[in-house]
Structure formats: C-alpha cells, structure tokens
Amino acid sequence: MSKTSLPRRRATGRITLEDVARAAEVSAITASRALRGQRSVDPALVARVQAAAQQLGYVPDPAARALASARSTHVAVLIPLLSNALFVDLLEAVQHTLVPAGYQMMIGVTHYKPEEEEALLRSYLAHRPAGLLVTGFDRTDAARRLIEDSGLPCVHLMETARVGGIYSVGLSQHEAGRAITEHLVSRGHRRIAFAAGQLDPRVMQRAEGYRSALRAHGLYDPALELLTPEPTSMALGARLLERLLRERPDADAAFFCNDDLAQGALLAALRLQVPVPQRLAVVGFNDLNGSDQMLPPLTTVRTPRQQIGQQAATMLLQLMRGVTPPAACVDVGFELVLRGSS
Image (cartoon, rainbow, N blue to C red):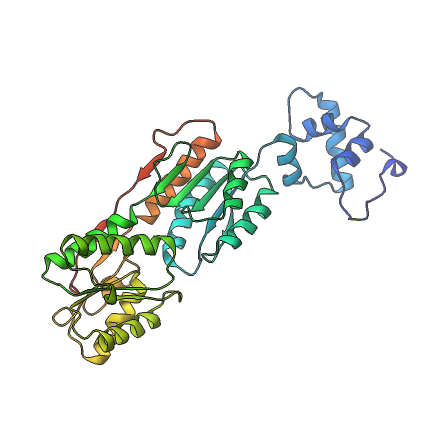
C-alpha cells in the first residue's frame, strides 16, 4: 500500500472503518469482518486489512460497533446517592456479577430527584445500553415512557412490585418498618416517635409501616413524627433527638429511618446523659457500618443490599440473553438485629 493511497485524516482526527477499507481496497463489511477475526474472510484479505489498520492507526469505536451490531456491553445503573454506604454495597454486588459476564456499568446518580433521573435516562439511552437497573418506582411519567419505549430489559432495585411485565428485586419497606415498630411495642414502649430525613419514597413506606403497627395497638400519635427533607446524617440525628426531648419529653422510644440518624442520636444521648434504652429506646434501619460499635450497640433492620444487587444483576443478565427469569418479583426479605439500644 503506497503513501499516496492513504486517506486524508478527518477534521476530528479519527480514522474510520471506511478509511481502512478504502486503503485495503475492500468493502467496509469485509474490513469489519476481517478485524473481528471471522473465519469466512480470506486470510490474505485479513492480513491486508490488518496492515492498513495498523498503518493508519485505526482504533475501533465500541459505541459505533454496538450500534452496528445492535448489541452493547454496557448497563445503565441509576441510584440516588454515592455517599450512602447502602448503595455502594449494592453497586459492588452488581459489578461483581456483571463484569465476569462481559458487561460494564454506566452509573448515574439521581440525588432522589425524578427530574434528574429523567435527564440521565435520556442521556444514557442515547448510548444504546444493553439493559437498565433503576432504583424504586418513583419517577416521572416521561421517564416511565422512556424506559418502556426503549424496549430494553429493566430491573427495579430496593422495592418490589407484583405487576405484569415489571421486574424487581427488593424488600417490603412497609413490612420492615412495621416489624421494628412491633418490636418496640413488645418491649413495653407506648410513646414511640418516628424521626426521618430525606423523605424519599422508601422512607415514607417505612413510616407507613410504623403507623400501621401503632394504629393496630391504638398507640398512633401524629405529634410523635419528626419529619424533615434534609439529607440524613449523624448531625441531623443528634438535632432530631434534641428536638424530640424538647418537644415530647414523654417519648419512651424513637425509630430513626436510617442508621446514620440513629448513630447521631445515640452520641447525642451520651452527651446529654440520657440513658438508652432505660429512658429512651433507639432503633435504626439498614444496619450500616459502625452500628454494632455504638454505645449501646444499635438495634436496627438489616437490609440485604448485596443480595439485592447480585440477584437484580443476575435477573438482568437473563433478560438480556432472552431468558425468562424464574420469578419477575423477588422479595429478599429483611432481618431484625436486636442489640442493646432497645
């Protein structure tokens, strides 16, 4: 191949498959098959195409290859936060399942905002991913249509829905909230507060579980709910405990919607010399790192987020391969972890 036969480099600087084919004097289809190592191509043509690609400095474009073959090796994963250890654990499990199968994650963070999720979906779907993993069911109508119209396999995380055509892996947030509240009632507590931040749909489902348990015992008091849209943190947990002691000094237990809040509350109780659980029982949710090291150790609900990530990714792999999963809705359950704080 002479230097005069080399194509002129495009303004973008990218050498295309068509440039390689022209330099090797073959069709673009033959060049593509040769570079993919298909046995149907004559070895002499393969050598010629490979020489042209090397001389031109051709680098295959995986996005273009995916478009051409209608296949992709990427999965879009949309989660609310990366600062929450719960979702980090989930992502680790998803990656450990997808990567050995030849897939990579495109991670999007929605910050619990449906409009941000919608924008991410529009952006990621333009890249033609092989499948979708999305958190929960709270999204805009436009986002739902984007998922439906894409025709891509999609699995919902953290919540369950027994609806035809919907695939999900998670747990009943309502039942978990009810169970931890029932535990407090069984210990003799009668004025049980619910303290929550973020107020995303899963937090509010836990709140409904709390309410249903207390209503069943005739104990529900809406004035014992402390709700704020602020992101959960240990600092917020301390402030919520101080507010509870100030506004409702008769409260004898508190269910915090997430362990970081409960951990902050326990530290505040130590500082304020409020005996736990003698004066006030404290429970949390999710069994985050450090909860077993608090003073006293925190009673909480353990959510199996690694199992959720692994099973959701496995379900998505089946769907992407055209295999119908054994169950469309998988409830992995939860575990009450009873420690010294209650």
